[in-house]
Amino acid sequence: MSPLNDIRALVESAPDGDMSAKQAAENRHNLLKQAPGGLGRMGEIVAWMAQWQGRPIPKIERPMVAIYASSHGIAKHGIKAHNKASTQQMVEMLRTGAAATNHIAAAGGAGLRVFEMAIEKPTADFTEGPAMSEKETAATIAFGMEAIAEKPDLLVLGETGIGGGTAAAAVACAMFGGNATYWVRAGSWVSKEVIEARVDVVKKAMETHRGHFADPLEILQRVGGREIAALVGAIIAARMQGIPVILDVFSTCVAAALVHAMKPGAADHCLAGHLSSEPAHQALLDRIGQKPLLDLGLRCSEGAGASATIGVLKAACAANEHAAISD
Image (tube, rainbow, N blue to C red; front, side, top):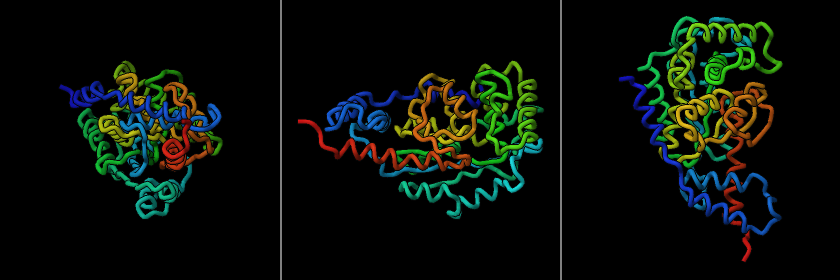
C-alpha cells in the first residue's frame, strides 16, 4: 500500500461546501441598494466565502498567512536568479517581522507563520531521480496541514526557496504538457543564462521521469518540492475544515492544480489572490480556470500579493453585512 493512498482517499471525500449559505449570500447581495453589478466581483467573493465558511454572512476575523520554506537539489544547476538570494535569509526576515509580507499581512489583521522544512537538507536532484520518496511526500503533505491548527477563517498561502519556481515549472509541464520553455518563462529581470539553465533542468526532468506522469501525487513526488507538497496538504486540510484559501504566485497555484487534478473541484475553495509578473503564472491560471483578484505586477513569492487581498475580502464581507438592503 502506498503511503499516499490516505491522501488520495481524503481528497475523494472532500466536502462540497454549503450551497444554501452561498445562495443566501447571493440573495442578500442582490438586495443591496445599489446599481445592478455595482460592486463587481464583490458579490461573487462573498458568495464564495459563504459557501466555504458555511455561513450566509461570512466574516474574516482570524485570517492566517502560512509561508512554506524549503530547498531543492536542483539549485546546484545555476538556476538562482541573483547572487543575493538566500532562502535562510528570507526565512529570518519573515520570522523577525522584517519582510514586506509581515507588514502587508499585519495591515489585513492577519497572523503569519513560517513553516521551515529542512532547508539545510535539499530534496534530491530530480534531473537524476525522484525529488522525494513516497513516504517523505506523504509526511510533508501531512506537515502542511498544520497551517489550520489555529483554526483560521481565511488561509493565505505563500512559499519561498531557491529552486521552487523551477520545481513548480516541472510539475506544471508534467501535468499539462507543452515544452519546458513555456513553463519556465520568467520576467525580464531573470538573465538569459539562468532561464536557459532552468529550461535545461525541466527538460532533463521530463526525460528522466517519462512514463510516470499519470498520477498527480507521483508527479509531485518525482519533480516537486517540499513546499509544494506542504501547500497541497494545507489546501486539503482547509477544504476538510471549511476554510477558504487565497493563493499567491505560481508555486501555490501549482499546488492547487495538483489537488484539482486528483479530483476536479477539490480546489474550488481556493481563489487566486493576484497575478504575478511571471508569464507562466497567467498560463497556469488559464489552465485551472482562475481569475486573480489583483494585478499589481509583484515579483516576490512570499505571500505578499495574496496577503494584500485580505483587505479586499474584508471590505466585500462588510459591505454585504452592513449595507442597506431593499425593502
